[in-house]
Image 1: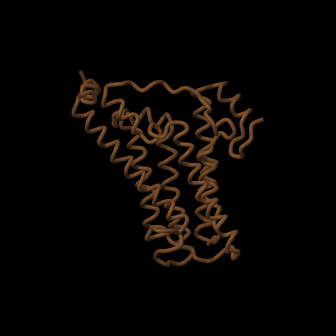
Image 2: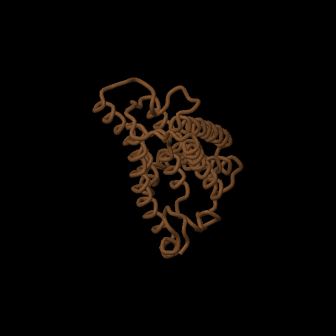
Image 3: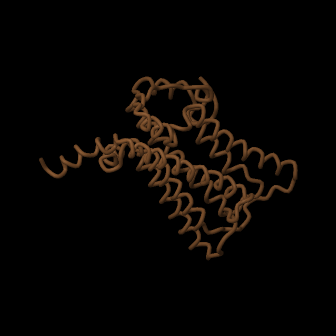
Length: 259
């Protein structure tokens, strides 16, 4: 037996041990806590409220340098977030990372990439637009928070804890197998295929004061959302076939509408 064969024969036994199940569960909880702190910070970062460093504060650098740094930070997140979500990468990745913690590891690395972006982001304070009407300004802030509510609500409508890895480690802890994925379109998903992405777009663009840095962030993340949708839907068609193709024909991608 080769060393590789020995490793593959030992791994299932280790992954199935009680201590590993408990440690995997703690790891999943830790990854989720990091995610939860990150997403809360993201809300403050984009809206400019509460958190110590926002999208419009931080070290001042020349505009060209700031744009390059910010684009590199967003590219790092986009590459990590997209590549690790692909089925081909998962098939390779789970040779080294136990399958029960694969999703938690993905969530943890995505959160760390975002925290790095928040930490190293360079502001571009030039004002593109500023809404002076107080009622309209409040409406835009409210709309931005509504976008974040839509994001969270949409995750719970499908399966929030599976999406962020807790369901997997909890099932593994009690020795229960994950059920195979099945196609379903609950509530909001009957009217828009990607309500989570729609929520992000609303949250990023509904700003009473739009600086050049905020505009750069909103524009690049929106572009990435469309790329992410194309990649995600390619995987969903491969997984569910005609069922998802018919869903695409029936339900709009981002604008809530059911044909």
